[in-house]
Image (cartoon, rainbow, N blue to C red):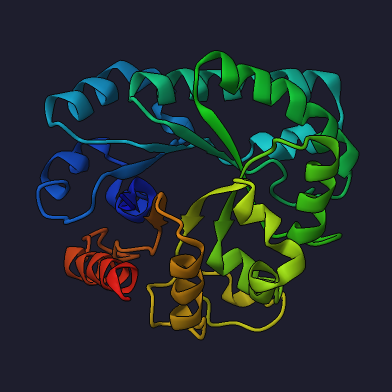
Length: 276
């Protein structure tokens, strides 16, 4: 049965002090089926406390989002930075396993360096995959925005090199590059049919083609993505796995979380999935 998750990154950020303890009250107000835990660099010294809080409150974490920035270090090709990235990823995988996560989402390329030296990212994927496989956590490469090529091209390169690679499709990232329609094309059907896409991030986008000033994570209905077509495709494919809502729900000034907005999104996704 499909599960609708909420990203902890939608709830916890700088305005509320990245206080992981907020998960305790917020998890009692949200109607999601679990969470995609977003790892922040501030939390490495608090992992035991975080795991204890999550388990004590019976919070389900089917997906884990590795710390952003790992891919940026891989892109450089500097051996010391690659080693640091692999070590950091290993810590993230360990944390994911402790939380009972089935999947770990990775920005294989990231930041200002993005996909500028993609061969380094492509080559390092094999080592990242070994780390995740050893912990029995499924590694998913996200279609993160690029500043040299585009995510769809990078996915094709990964599939050619690693035929069993798996992905998370982010609706906002795809719309940013004008690539939403790629998902629906017959020649790309194998990505769903052969199980490459194993997770979705469902967020709206209000900008134009590669409109960096509008690269915000918006609630469904706040942008121009055609979610009726998207969910009709999902139903047609019989996809019955996980979705994560990442819409920023905390006030940029006060840090107060709009749980009503998130619950409306959760209900919307469930209603779409239930349509005949």
